[in-house]
Length: 204
Image (cartoon, rainbow, N blue to C red; front, top):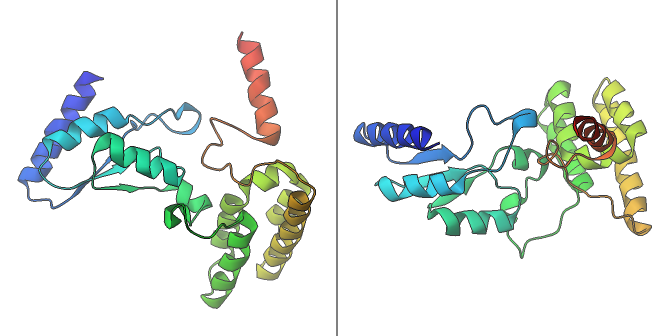
């Protein structure tokens, strides 16, 4: 709303007057999360960018490298940041000429680092579900295997089995997406997609 934008402008003015050297602004409200996640309002970020005298980092709506370029052009900000997308795709800022990664590549490389640095198993498992979200909506038996895994070796075994399964998918020409975590509420996959379709049908 216009009132919300004015509140943001007032806050950024106070922060700037207090001596901040850079600001970061998200283009969604605190209520826009989970099932209520909607499009990020880059117009309002652009309006703030025109008013502040320090560098402004845009946050929200960054899912691909193309989003990075569009956001910078639309808002005039000096930089962008991402949070949820990076949980799934750590190579988001790799750029269009960078190496192509598959999600199972990330998972296996992460596991090497996790073992090296003795990462707690709870954190490892959480990252596995971020990396492999889309594929696990297809291969639900492996999702159950990850969920039941008790230690590093069992998690690694599940990740290895997942990687082999996804390689088979790609060889067979499967068009099942490799990513989906960031869009899980707006474009659900698998069982969640069926549930959403059923909910929408009931609401008509």
